[in-house]
Image (cartoon, rainbow, N blue to C red; front, top):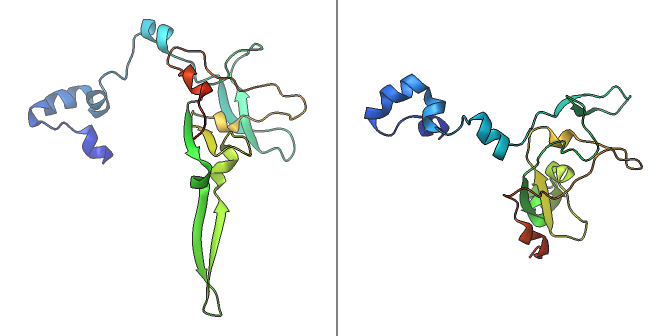
Length: 161
């Protein structure tokens, strides 16, 4: 799959792939100018994962620079998942010869945004965003819908179905 996709499909392109490298050859627009990045890019290095100094808090996201109130901590594209698809279905053979059906939610559910009565789960798949934790009483971060040009604002008025 991936290895084959990174190789030239035409033998005449092999010298160019060797010169550029297979990554640059297979994805030629991956390197952008500073001007393009200023206009279209978003910073994704405002946070890093790390171990909390708070006892039993586990891992979390930590700022790599000072962030002002209202700053975007990290962009987070969302994968849309139907709640029913987050279930694992399996059967187990019991000692008495019968089979019992089981259904349990996947761990993925812990990292999704949703309302408990909604059939739609939103999974953020940007680097490190799943480490963002906050105090439930005094949060220092919040989620907001993007106002960038690629955002599909008309989706806000659609039903989950």
